[in-house]
Length: 124
Image 1 (tube, rainbow, N blue to C red):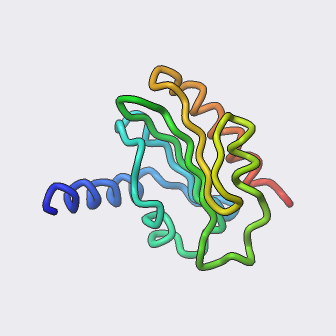
Image 2 (image 1 turned 180 degrees about the horizontal axis):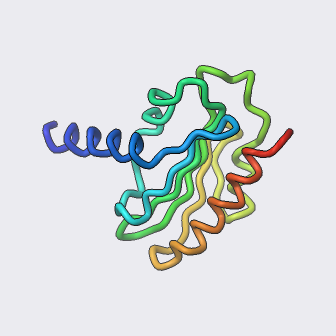
């Protein structure tokens, strides 16, 4: 349990350091930190008013863009996240989705992240 708790606390610290909150979206880039998986509720604990979370990361086997909508504010969701992720070869559900890229395609993942951020942050 100790190594898991250590990694979880490290991820909380990374999100706290890297996250930005704009127009209802908490977003952060963890590519350079080598993170491609984390507890999806961290961002909502830090930013409880957020409508969405969006982040990009990279591990040994993949780069990934992860999208989520706040489960404590379902009335604020305006987008089908699985449809958005599907445009990048990903999928999921209307409320949570992701798109994975090859590990050497972090640049493509970051480009997708920026495009999705513009869409989620824009008027709707």
